[in-house]
Structures are given as C-alpha cells and as structure tokens.
Length: 171
Image (cartoon, rainbow, N blue to C red):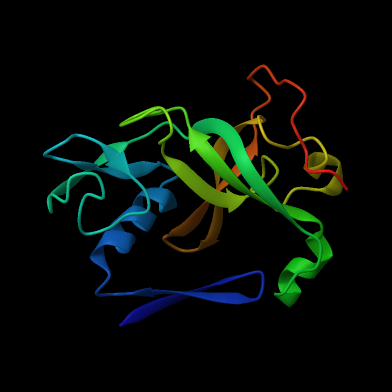
C-alpha cells in the first residue's frame, strides 16, 4: 500500500515497502530532524539509504541533528513547472551545508540538504524574503505539514544568527 500526499498540486508518494524513507518522514512529521548514522564509522549521511556512503556498512541508526546551516548554493525558480508553485515565483531552492559534521571526512565534504526557502510559517517565502537570501545566509529548518503523519523539511532565514551580506548570482 502506498501513501499519497498533495503539496501545491503535486502528488508525493511514499511506498509502504520503503522503510528507510518512511522512518525519515516519521521523524519529520514530529518536526524532529534525524539523519542516519553508520554504526561502523559513526558518520551521518543524507539522503537516507540502506547503506553508508562513506564506508559501505549496512547498519544505520537514526540520530537527532540540529537543522541549522549555511546556504552553500541555490537556484532561483522564475517560471514554475508545477502550476501550484506559479503564484509563489520567484522562489528559491537552497542547498544548505549543515553545521553538524562540517569538514568530515575532509574539508571539502559536508552534509548538504536541498529544500525550498520558506517563511517561518512553512509557506514558500515571499519575494521580500527571497531577496535577502543568498550564498552564505544562515538558515534553520522548519517543517511544512502536508497531511496527517507527513511534513517536509524546509529552510527559513535564521533571524537569531548573525547574517553577513549574502553572495547572489548576478541578474
């Protein structure tokens, strides 16, 4: 049995046999961010998977992770492919480098997570919020509830963190 959820006109399906993603989204539904940690090398990884991408070990445990980080890169969507996103253009899809496990196993590697930029309420960010965010912006995770037992992790500007002038792609 599959579970389907609607988000801005898109249908998101979660297969009942996909235990790894079901566990991941169960944590998100509680607004509690968890990632898998390898029991052999103790490194966290994303996205959730059936094995460690660092050492190949098959046994993973879920560990709570603070959802804070820095925008590593982003994409500004000016023309939405999905009609439900059109009223929200331009919107940002952020690649955020988490503070957790930064520089492990090397200075060029880190936990990086894609998600939309949203306001603190979990709705896609307004144009006035979009212009404030770029590479180097400090963000924190919030969750957008899309159905009973399902929430999507997203990013919002972290107003409690010092912010420098973010780097933006030229117009």
